Length: 287
Ligand SMILES: Nc1ncnc2c1ncn2[C@@H]1O[C@H](COP(=O)(O)OP(=O)(O)OP(=O)(O)O)[C@@H](O)[C@H]1O
Image (tube, rainbow, N blue to C red):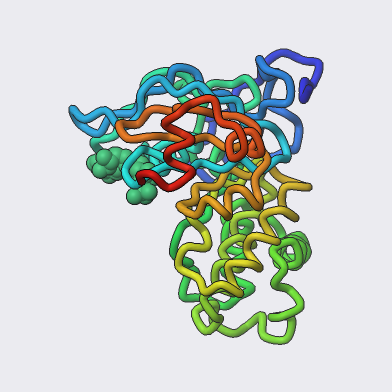
């Protein structure tokens, strides 16, 4: 249980500049008490709409702390939509609307007093295509820390820690001032992972982080994901079922129409799923 012994804490929105609005999220104390043991994120009857189209229907899911949870399912079934609803990235899509509840440490992230910018520091994201800024390797990772107003000494230390945790430091130690865009695709993705972990989030959301990479770079990212789960809660969307089976502890299977059909231990999903539709999907009968 990740309870902190106190009642739920709200996410401060007292500052309007965005950069310092996360006072109550900046430390590492849990925000509140999860309703389910070991769950960091709890989705309850979550619906997501794009205009009149409903992309997700009544999603219930408890995402455990410091484990890898894989979201799998055919194209268009709502995996990315669910991932983006966790740290309110869907807020950036004009037509997107969320109903239901999504708790982070027992606090509903859709409450009016939650600042999405502060939330995204606690729940970072890595996208399908590596997207480093056109800046030096160091500045890519330092960017978010400087926005937070950290002093130079802290920035330097946290950049190195993040690069090390992203398994990149050794490869780039002598070229921290070179452009992030000069790295290989796999290195760029690890740079983006370093950028996401620099502000010391608790959760890392990954949307098909290896799908644009060659097999060697993919294997490095898979190793890294398993390593990261020692420190962070990881939620990863993947099209690659072997990858989900290899690296995840829990697997959620979404099927067409935006329904979560089964969510269980990864071994159970791949060896003995409850649902015939899930069995058909993972054995390649459709999808
Ligand atoms: N920005 C958007 N505006 C309107 N509809 C969207 C938007 N993003 C996604 N959708 C729709 O929502 C549904 C779910 O899409 P989503 O991208 O979440 O699925 P997915 O399972 O991640 O798909 P893929 O595996 O192809 O990435 C689809 O019908 C898609 O067309």
